[in-house]
Image 1 (tube, rainbow, N blue to C red):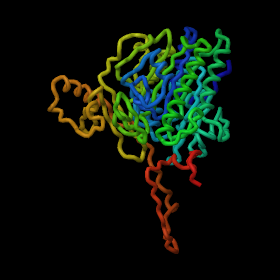
Image 2 (spheres, rainbow, N blue to C red):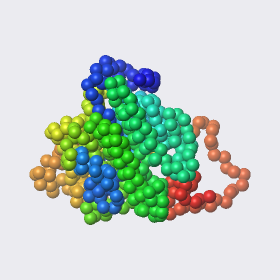
Image 3 (cartoon, rainbow, N blue to C red):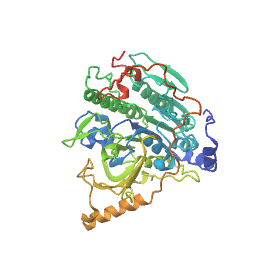
Image 4 (tube, one colour):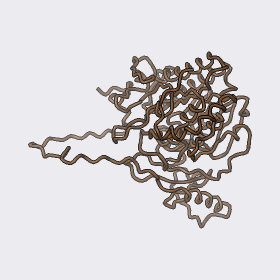
Length: 484
């Protein structure tokens, strides 16, 4: 077994040091392999198992039928806030700094699983090292606890395409493929190869395997796929991308079954935020506009599936309120590792429920949502299956008013509803403000970049495009549009 690379910062190492002896013991007790799949921009309305009828998702529907489907699974409304919360188990008010940034000092689930004896692999989308707007340098995959990686956008500059003609970094080696190569195939292959290697190793001595698979699909730019090369409109291409995402997840499941590893593997599938606002889907006969980036329920209500044949009873539908912060403690308990001393996560382990035990005693969920460091104060709110309270006092019945257009008067509520809102208010009041300040804009150095009036006034012409996002241009690595 190759030695683990030296990869922990001093703070992370200090937190984990007292934990190492326990990790060596628990590895001998039969730890499961663990795979976490994170889909990009996928709201709950997109999957057939949740009543979606706009897209074909047979593989994910089968995973839900063979395992557990959480009806009330939530993420953050945007990708980086979700990824930071997922990987660290902490509410964003505790450690979210800025967009496209993971603090190198944060302890991630990969750190804990690595010290519990796991081989740690990541393949897919990174986007956590830098964003070109602030001076902070975020974590590399190695600093975040991963032994091996194949990633798109390891760094913001020179990131290239994630889809056709992709640019990927495999274990620090950057490579760009031809225009006939589809990036999601390559990151999926990396996952399958890790499973093949695990299956080929001596069972008496091999490490348990942890794979974190943050997929690029079905995030825009909306492109054709190998299975649907003729898709034209954004809606058609999104449908093709969802179908291909489903196909790739099915390949992971099939590979586990091929090697008879399914009974030894916990697989979790979660969306990172709601569907793109440019997409409208149908769920249970009702049109659902995508809510990505918004504090509406459509911004955070995502698919949340668990699969572990032989351990998770098939066909389970769980109504408990859960969120991505619960993944970290679930993985740690499944690995038999325990949290390192001094690490207090906000999520709760779902493992007892997955094994058929009682539901969590949880009345509501809390979200601290700070999309970008320059976008103003964060949104802070708590909610249950029906009501939502913002910290500015506004109360909504999001079940009957999904667009949150009509604030409720708490005095108008009946006793039962008032009790529900009291529990929501109690949770919201229990959360302090941000512990860390958001990454600040760096002012210009005195005497540098000062504006000097030009000798001659130029003629200025400003073009404003209608309904065009940053990924709709060839310069942004969208190879299926022509903007020379």
